[in-house]
Length: 253
Length: 253
Image 1: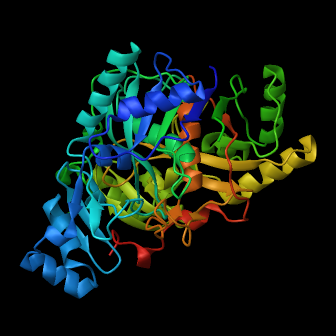
Image 2: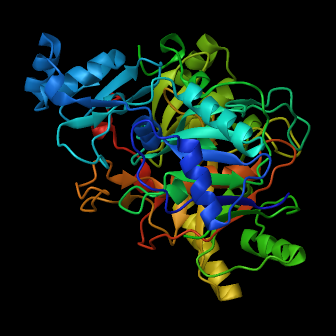
């Protein structure tokens, strides 16, 4: 087995609404002398996908509902922001001063429905929602690379999230294309020939975490990273398959 | 920023009780022509750490308590295994047919107290516990590399775990030394000069996930991986700092 490489694409210019992400990344790669190889995995930060898809909302245009006002008043939040979270969510799971944990409309459990206020140019009142369908966003980027560069790559959209039980945030996949999201190892044997007990590996999340190591979080942020040299299966599964449904979830009953 | 490399150390022989892990890894690295560089991060699979530390228990020697018998009978489990989980834990959080989620004695929330039955040679009734103190295990390996090879590396002990809300398992850090476990970015600014909202990054977990990509889970397993070329802070923090205490945990109240 050879080494796996995590290659940062530095110097990508600020992504604006309706930009073609695939093109911006490819152009910068060429400047850096980096060229796609077959089976590269292109990891793209959620933030630039949302920006390119113009997922901005101006809080000035949001009229909060009674529910939003109630939660916001109790927890010391901006009612317009709470309203935006509610609109993006199927359900609020936990709402306290410290956190607003929801089931996002995609089924993903996360804080604040993934709504972001950092690294946004311009107005104080602008917020950025998650992409409408991150699996679809990943597929479009993958198809664009195939069309323009004639190379088959996989694509993962990487968000930074907290989690239950463990402190700190890390990179996770919220959308993917051209790669199996969950690798089912059932039926495979361990070194002693016993069937494996740990059966389903969240491979795209491991890849997202690895990419996140090169992305950075602050001013130096690098919104695209290539993972090279990793073996993966190409089944057509999506990252939304990672989200546990409520009735199989021990922690939401 | 340069690429980060994930380098698998293939061909490490089966680790036996009381083996010197650092030596076994170093010997195999030399055979492969791989030599430590300063600031390499050596990631070691929990399983070989536990094996070397002889954390085996023979279920034949376990007399289950009444509590263990009750849980086991209700959920169709081996009462001796349930007893072993209880002995390794501060508290059982959830016990159903599908899962036994506990707070391990270290404070970490995980399934089955991290007890493992796969990839164990020999008897059907042998189980393998987590290392007694994985941060200490990591420190010992780091100090051994420094002593024998005169190179400063960081060490992470990688376990494979499930999580709330998302399907599939992935690599996480359960012990570390020579590297800051949680990177506090508070005070840093984003690209627009606003203070960052996402403030604390679980860097050792991202590294563990990256290492896990090269470790594999089944017969091909590779129990040691080097992460090379990653910038990290060397504060003397431990992976146990990743574990949320019960009273700051939204999902255990």
